[in-house]
Image (cartoon, rainbow, N blue to C red; front, side, top):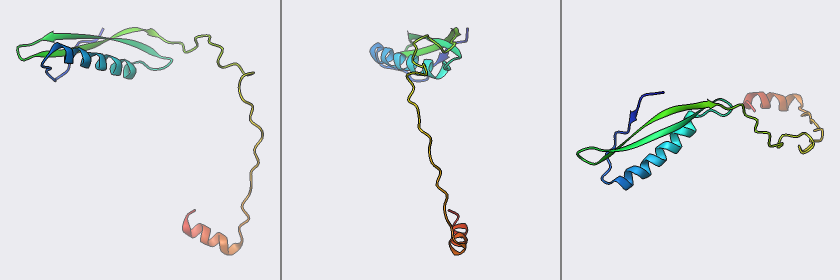
Amino acid sequence: MESWVNLNKIFLNIKQAENAAKIVETTESRLSSIPRGPQYNIETEVYEVNDGWRIRWRKVFVGNDSGCKGCSSCETSQLKKMRPRKVRLLNLHQENLKSFLLLGM
């Protein structure tokens, strides 16, 4: 378990602090949790100081995500098959080749 991180801003009322705590919780959980890797929940706490209200939060490790949830969305029969593509070669004459190389295209 990690230590608490304090938000530097002081809020005038508890409603503003709770709204900001929800934003912090959502943002930090998205930044902390890696797809198909470690997953974290964010605990937030709103507390009163003499000037107003402050927020602090910490990351709590939940577990690892294997990635596959068994939703069958990756079946090959449903994938769109791509047709073969053609490659067209450029026919450059000697004088066009010089200008092509000089211009850096």
